[in-house]
Image 1 (cartoon, rainbow, N blue to C red):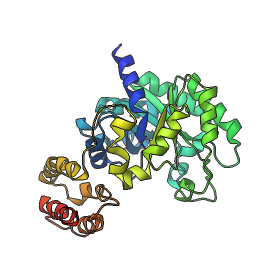
Image 2: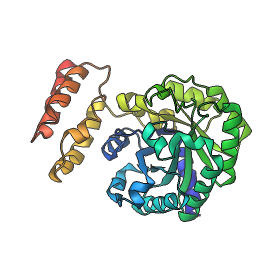
Image 3: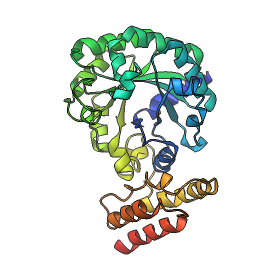
Length: 335
């Protein structure tokens, strides 16, 4: 029963999620995002199964209990290795384990995982089945609508059927094809056209599968419009990173229906101070946290001064909370 309750809660949290983004959605970023929204499902950066199982890099799994609900995204294609990595993720306390079948980078391709797995739905199904057997938490998949010369209207349904038959009940679909040859990872985020209609169609064809849509979504208005079309969830990436307050501060009310007024960006900064102080006490550097806070005041008076101060001074030796206080003073004076 506990497992069923947990899955139901996560399905609700997945109405809005923040995409796993390499070098961006680390534990400090997620802690900031949690100050803004108590409900949104957060994701780790992708962690490769070989790094955990062969490399013993379990330090990559560290996170704060205040980040829940939080999912671990794994990269890999070895069935046994992914099962072991999933088990390590569960032991570390993650609420969900996600398999990356959408990243188009060269490094990912050379390891035979990421978006290239769209070409091997049977292998992905085997991986999902093994991971589900290894853990009690939910196992999910993030994918594209297809890769290279695949016809999405053929490839995507076949892929979804394979993972669904393996017991995957929740999937995030980036509504773009990935071109593994000819486009850079950055271009793969923008150049291939979005096909929201196909993802919506998949929800009608797979009504029992919890489907979230990802790609090009830059506001809560857009998220609400997609949810209104019958999709179960919306995943937002770069916009949530560059403008975290705009995306997350009112999400609990608008997406999850809670009677909760959004906190101000200043309050979010204040809530981060004890966390930052603890990080500094443990030998961390200020910019490791504040680099994720540069966009908190995006579009507001003083935002440029805030960004410039943190960008220039937070990386200096000995930089501490006084740097943040100076930044807040810029905001106050501008207002």
